[in-house]
Amino acid sequence: MSTSTIELRAAVGTTPRTGHYHMSGLLRSEWTKLRTVRSTMWTLGMTIVLGIGLSAIATAETTSHWSTTSLASRAGFDPTNESLIGVAFVQLIVAILGVLVMSDEYGTGTIRSTLAAAPRRPKVLVAKATVFGVVALVVSEVVSFVAFFLGQALLKSPTPHTSLGSPGALRAVVGAGLYLCVLGLFSLGLATIIRHTAGAISAVVASLLVLPLVAAALPSSIGDQVRKFLPANIGNSLTSLHSGAHQFAPWTGFALLCVYAAAALLIGGILFVRRDA
Amino acid sequence: MIEATGLTKRYGDKLAVDQLSFQVRPGIVTGFLGPNGSGKSTTMRMAMGLDAPSTGRITINGRQYQDLAWPLREVGALLEAKAIHPGRSAFAHLWMLAQTNDISRTRVEEVIEIVGLTTVARRRAGKFSLGMGQRLGIAAALLGDPEVLLFDEPVNGLDPDGIRWVRNLLKGLAREGRTVFVSSHLMSEMALTAEDVIVIGKGRLIAQMSVDDLIAQSSQRFVRVRSPEIGTLRTALEREGATTVLEDDGSLSVRAITEDVIGECAAGIPVVLHELAPQSASLEEAFMELTESSVEYRGEDTASVAAKGAGA
Ligand SMILES: Nc1ncnc2c1ncn2[C@@H]1O[C@H](COP(=O)(O)OP(=O)(O)OP(=O)(O)O)[C@@H](O)[C@H]1O
Ligand SMILES: [Mg+2]
Image (cartoon, rainbow over all chains, first blue to last red; front, side, top):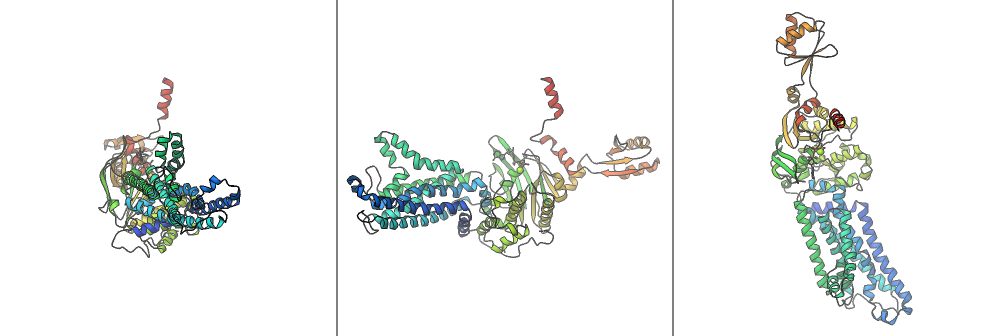
């Protein structure tokens, strides 16, 4: 420990070199950050367990009560949507993870270390969004596919069930995963704008849970129009076989969600570049 | 080499750094002194590209921080505010930084060894003591083996052992030819560590000079003289142009002439001298004198508070 006996000069690994720090280093660093903090790993674990678990519980329940289910409910039953119910529940968790990926840097001061290592801020944001986006997409698709297959297996005859090959099913399953990923990116963008965990989570909760209530309180002529633009409704249209009367078509809604996420990330990025860290 | 040119930073109405220009040379430790709130940390954050200057610039080897090719290999910094996730281990923190600048895992282990955190490297940094946290910050600064190092209050919260360790580290880094820029308001500490100092007050440059010059220049420099015939000697010294003060302990504080002149004068009378001791002001005193007019947050004088209280 005494510095008089220890050589400060690096013995290895820091030979001067040409070039410039690069994206692949930033991507690897962001991945290390994600996996070396317990809260993010917990959040990912919860997404998997709850996403699959809640779908399994819901489909098993449906099967056990099918004989006493009213004819009207039977007619409107959508086995695909039913098996993806867990995905709807975990959207808030994925969104919170998206927030944490950014807001934690500010909350803990890590942002200063991050920017000292990589001062080009747009690069940092791109690396962060890419790593989070890929992780969120992989986890969400896994959850979505497992929930679908497990759900269909639990929906035993006479309860209707379906297969991936039936019309709209694949779109719903793939769409559910895509929805979670893009919603997470939207949240990451919000967190980049807001920079505080509590504030950013409030904003996410507002857009997912509060705005639908507000829309419901409005006169239905306006409320229905507002509701179709809300993320949760877009998600529902993606995971249902038939879009509701006041919903965008699945991919139209998804494109809109992508616009939200891109806008949040873009505004966040501009502020990130302009503001003092 | 760190160079500030007309560096200015405003936060709203508050002028935190005001037209600051200075140069920090390689091969020595340069102390960055100033009272609380004088703009030291703000200057360091601007050097790191964390805060953007309102006007002016601060460059490292001629380039702004954003333009460095391999930032961690060129500049290492320990900033004032915490910059570590409490949930991440020391190793993980350093490793994620290393990856951004293509620094090897071996080097990560090496800096952990240098700062003496080997046994706790896999523990969550949130459980670290103040001193261990500071060592981790220093490890991060050393990671890329950079030629330029910035330390904002590196001995904050360290025990005497830790302070000595940091002092030796800073000197060691400078001896290797690196540029070492260290802020502190422990002037006595800087006297032992730094060769040059940059003194600021209210965001403005007050002085840039060597520590020796700073002390020598101070009017606090005087010579302590004791003699059985102090009255006679005093008259003679004042005739030589000295200003003198007779202290309570019977010694004479002599200013404005050197100990050589005092000795010759005493021999000429002649009077016996019992003590002839040049007293240098501590860096602390020299610093207080320099920054007297620019102290941002001064505790109100107790006497004047009492007077105000009486007047009310
Ligand atoms: N982000 C900020 N927003 C507003 N004012 C700020 C900000 N950062 C610093 N200041 C103000 O700028 C001035 C300089 O602060 P700075 O932290 O740079 O001083 P310092 O010399 O490091 O002080 P200390 O010795 O206490 O660490 C202070 O008056 C401070 O209140
Ligand atoms: Mg400070």
